[in-house]
Length: 146
Ligand code: HEM
Image (tube, helix red, strand yellow):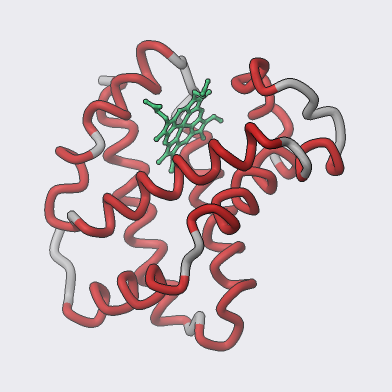
């Protein structure tokens, strides 16, 4: 994958504004509410029975931070995302048995969280760079399934 200087700037400058704890919590909560079938993977997290329970769930919060920290690591290694996410891809495929379609859904909610946070600074060009990055992220996470 080739990244232009503008794309790299769009990704890293947005990432500097991200709070992995708060935005990770928002993204994972949104995933669980908007795509409720994703809840089945998190049966060990306790009560996810409604929006209030999901938003107040400490395990969701802690896990959202882990997920966004991994996304941040990928942004630090844009030229080797696949290599960098190889172990996570294997664990999601072989141990967690996560349907890889769900990676796309997480990418979608992440774009919404970023757009909400950044408002007019999330320009079409910035969104384009993020959509490209999310495709690369999803492909890298899906790689261990084949
Ligand atoms: C665990 C990252 C998408 C389900 C993890 C961990 C990370 C991670 C870093 C912790 C691994 C560890 O502690 O060794 C990501 C990233 C994703 C993603 C970067 C996409 C951008 C998903 C999706 C699902 C999912 C879409 C399900 C719908 C899980 C589950 C665990 C896990 C069930 C184990 C949780 C636990 O029991 O603590 N993921 N993940 N992940 N992930 Fe993902």
